[in-house]
Length: 438
Image 1: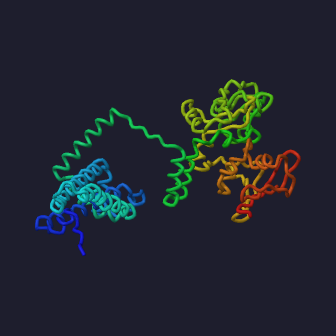
Image 2 (image 1 turned 180 degrees about the vertical axis):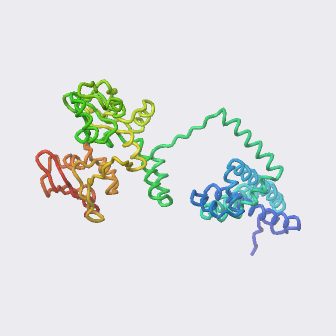
């Protein structure tokens, strides 16, 4: 029985034994691979440190923590040092690996040699020198930063790396002045990024991030104060009546209407009346009115915020398709969409809801849907898709039912049961909302 001889390149591999120089090259490649892993891990570690991590380093006030903070204060120099060192190490690995492969596979036509040289070395550098160290470093950012802080500081001061890094940094400054980089990020990408960081971000910070993401989608009609709740004055009122109204309302800007609340003719700024407080009813207070700023109901609040900034205004009148006033939106209303409720010494803490238990709330029918979402902490996507023209919780129930429900009648929206507690022929007064209702 004849035994088949192995291919020539396998015979060469079996015959050739590594000599002293090849063994030395293998050891050097292993060392370079470890160094490459450390440098790659340092890149991920330093740039993954959270604000909480840096605060902790500041509190420690140790030499190593100070060195880490110093390196973070010069991110361009740090990144240039890491990239240059990593490239030198990877080039060294490739060159020495070629000498080793030449020893075992001297025949250029060997497919096995090609596979090892191109695929094998690439995967070795990619996995053990890049991917695995970076994954480990992200999870242990502080620990890896402490280990690599001093070596990186020494590397940056090492002449060849120092010279190359300075050249790269200066050239980047030259080009950055000529080319303006733009990054297009969709709102869905931002929503995904905020969702990913939910567990790692404080609750209040996460609410602010969510507010920023939804900011560009929110319309003026969603956050406006309805016309029936707006404190406004008739243009025919006497000056003494105006002064008393100002004292009772506590607002610094008041809409002024003619005949009906639909016809807003101006905005009364209380500070404009200060020089005339001693005047009697003959004083023409209407001369102090300022021109109102009208906006449509569907105007996005991010655009409205820019308008407020350009026009130096704090209040706008929201009008419907027929030109009638629907309500008002103030600068404070817009900011509250990001940072939450803002209160001052003149704000009254009106109880617009009560909490029965963890899943049951009682709301007034005039409670806006936006306030309802915030209080009950429910996902608003389902309600927003069904609300139609409704802006209040009572209006939403009427929109779904097609009529004004009577006491104890209810609707079910997803896992939320909304029961009418009190209503009359004109409107729904109070509602009970039970969440997670099966």
